[in-house]
Amino acid sequence: MKIIVFSTHLSCIPVLDYLGAQDLLKAVVSTDKLKDHHLGVEYYCNNNDISFFKVNRQDLLITIKKLFVEIQPDVVLMFGFSYRIPANLYEFPPLGFFNVHFSMLPAYRGADPLFWQMKNGETSGGVSIHKVDAGFDTGAVVMQQPVPFIPGETWGIADGRHGAVALNLIAQLMEKLKSGEEITALPVNQSLASYYPRAAAADVAIDWDVQTAAQVEAQVNASNPGAGGAVTTFKQQLVRVLEVSPVEATGEAAFDAGTIVHADASGIYVQCADRKILRINIIKLNEGFVTGAKLAAMGVQRGEKFENNMFEYHEIYN
Image (tube, rainbow, N blue to C red; front, side, top):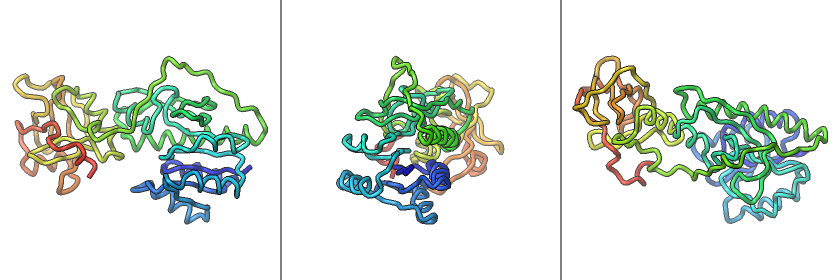
C-alpha cells in the first residue's frame, strides 16, 4: 500500500514516522506557506530521505496530478493542509482520500478548530478522520474519538495530545485498509454542525470591558503559541499575554476591568469584567518575555491598567 500525506502541520511528524516505519509513506506534500515551527515537517522529511514537495496555489493541480500519476497512491491522507485540493482528484486513490480534523465533526469545521474550541470554553475536543469531499470538513466521518481538554492547557499542549490520538486512529484505519475491511461512515449528529473561519487578528484581542476571567483565560490559552499570545495594551504598548492563572479572590467595585489590583513578588493580579481576578504569569513586551513577578519588580503598581487593543488589528501579527 502506497500513501501520500499532505500536511503543513508539525503534529503530523509522528504519523510520518509511523507510516515510514511501515514502508507505506511514499511522499509528503506541503505548501509555500510552511513557516515557523511547522518547518519541522520539511526538516524531518529531508533528514529521513522522504520525498518532499512544496506547492503553491497556482501550480497545485498540475503538480499533484503529476505526482499521483508517478506514485499511483492507494491512499491519500491530509493532516492540516492549507490549500484546497481540487475536487477532481478525490477519487484518484482507490482506497480513499482522508482528512484528519481536530474536533468531533460535524462541530467546529474550519481551519483552526482547536483555537475556537478553547476560546469558546469547550471542555472536550476530539479527533475525526473523514473522507474528503467538495465541502469544508463535510465528508463522511470514518474514525472519531473525543479528547477532553485539561484545565489550563495551552493550544500547543492540546495540539500535541490531539496529535497522539490522531496517530492511534490513523494506525487503526491503515490496518482496516490493509485487511480489505470496508470503511463505513459513522453516525454523527448534524444538528451540532458548525463552521469557524481562520482566526483573525481581532479574535485574539482581549476585551477587558466584557470578558470574564474564565473567558480571558480561555483566550490566552487558545492563543499560545499559534497567535503568540492574547493581545492587549499596557502603557501605550502592544503586549501579548501567554499565561494566566485564576485566583480565588474578588475584585473591587471602584476598579475598572483590566486594572491591576495587586502587585508583589508573587506576580501581578488583574480584575476582569466579572470582578474575578487573574494572575498574569507570562507576558511578552517589546523588551521580551517576562513574568508577572518581574513586572512587579520593574515597578508595575496597583491601579495601573491593561486597556483594550488601541492599535490597528492588522498590526497584531506583525
